[in-house]
Image (cartoon, rainbow, N blue to C red; front, side):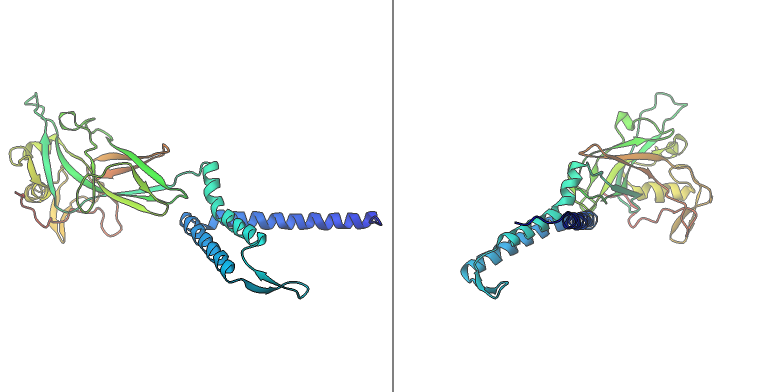
Length: 316
């Protein structure tokens, strides 16, 4: 066998190196596109579809062989999937699963978003206050209230919501009435049944629930409520039938009747309270949002106002 001249070997080596670089670039480009473009749902459903299609084609060829003409004009019978087809299927499955696998190996971070707002509807509540040991220094009162909270999973992996807390901010009392915590449970939006954690949150999905906690009514407002409001009542009874009728809200802000409900008189930030809501995932990620009664400022109104409840009378 005549050996190839050195320049031919050099030329073949250069061509081989260029081909290798092009192949590597194509592979890396395919992997990068797979990581960026393939969502988690497509990984699972695409894998099942490809495998099912491969099994169906292989079984049909085993039962009904297909006549095929190969290079050179000779005819063969295809009686099943060959090695090239199987390698091609394996490559497609590899590209489908690589975002999932790499996410676990490199610790893909969890991306969650949380939104909260108070529940504006009228609903049953409880008016609680501690027995004051001093007649000259009355304490605050506590009203059970609800906040709508939505947690959205914007990441590339499913998350498990395993726990939550509600903590007071600012000058609020550190505990609720009779040393109760501020986190009074989370409930279903539709049924008001208690929600049990953990809850699995898939990629691209949202979890909406309601958080039960306290409105802390300052002592100067609570002293007006104590003789009038029973323990079991409704939010409309406290706000609309009693407080708004006296021109104040539960924090002592002045209000007046107007279109659609009662409006705060001042256009400056009103007296309010802040509670820190924290939700924790199974991997230790903690997401926080602030629960307030007045969200703002708004572009349509300086400050949102409470709406008139549909049923302001106490429920039996």
